[in-house]
Image (tube, rainbow, N blue to C red; front, side, top):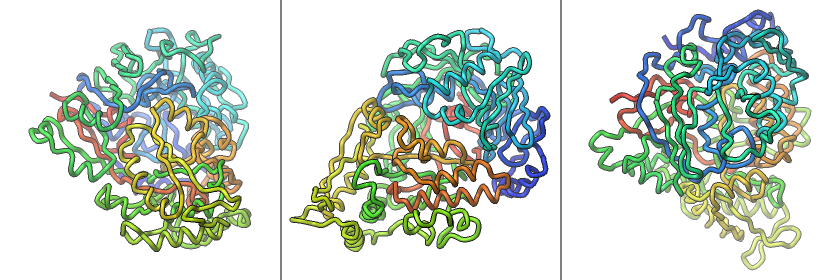
Length: 603
């Protein structure tokens, strides 16, 4: 029987006291680990609770991406990679259950050991682990992988590497990581890195490997074919070492997964209607309700399925680059957020069906509370009160328009905020305090149909404010390159967050990441308050302290007006071939770890 999400959250809160008294965190071998309390599944579990352990193996599906690719190495910064690859080809020591806030179960590792303070973690590899070519995977590969990723890999791996004091082999199949900081999440993160082959990469330029140098993995799929920029084919490895591991039961069921690339979303959708793509995720409710009436849908060859989730909203919107004027002034960001006619845009594009994102963790217990900060949240933010943007402590809500196309009241409020910041209007042109006309560019990727529509509907408000705005669309490779170098004024922004945010928060909005090319801190925020809240989140031993620190960070981010929020999705929408079947939905809802990983084919 599955455990209801709110029962899990109650346990998440109540058993945190076990952490203080030792609880699970003893230096004894365990089959799993959780950020707080004990994992939900016992040592003898046979499969994850949301999968069909008896799902049939077989079938071939085709998925579609927009843009192209010039790399098949998802573990370095260079190049554009099919985003799905890192979910299919490489195993890690542990795998995440998406039916718990943050719990890991053994994959390459058969057990994990941690002391009460989690200053170190030790893994024991399973016997017989191999790479897809049949070569053995051992402790040397684990140690080599962490050093390689930490020194030559994508910036997302740098944070963990900088907090590892040492990695050592402690037995024939045992490896220990010792940490140099008080960060309880590190014991979990150390189990989640892909393991690469030392024999393949030792002495080579990993960061600049050519397209044909495909990383050798130990996962259930191998890249069996590719046409640069056009398609990648993944084939299920019949000799996969881990097919009998409990964590893998009911997963990785399709014999073949092909990823085809299209110039834009419209062409991709037409390919789906024609039966050339097996499934598409839809992110527009109005489109979902009106454009999915075509022959294959009417005769039942294609069906629509929705998947409710219980995860935080994350943040989706237009992000402003605070490294550049005038976006370094919070009053300018506030004025632009106020001018954004959400109610009208939402009605035009979705029929008003979707609620606006109210904060980075809205739709969850981690979201900031409305009104003034109180209790532990207020105490955590008090030392930074003098530097916080107005609204952080007092309370902040997204501005609301009247739903009309012109939205005059909001435009007047935005104009007043620009005036307060020293801007003036001369001959219908908004001018900065330095006397320069205000103009900026919204950078978007070609094929981003909905986002371009949002930008187009934003332009009239900017024109009424006297701002000259250009929408610039570039191909996928250019877009990724410019985003990595923070070469933009305003661009599309999406950050998914979990019920157990941790070290990735430094990479998303930590001060150190603000000037680190390739980081995900696109807004360039440097906030001592945010840095301190992340530290408190990572060192918290009780769930109430963790929740308070997250709520406080959410306040600083939201009141900072770094992103103009769009709408949130409380359910995933997938149209798919009727022969693609799916199991129960985990609390995190749909994602690559659910579709296609837990789906199967049934004639």
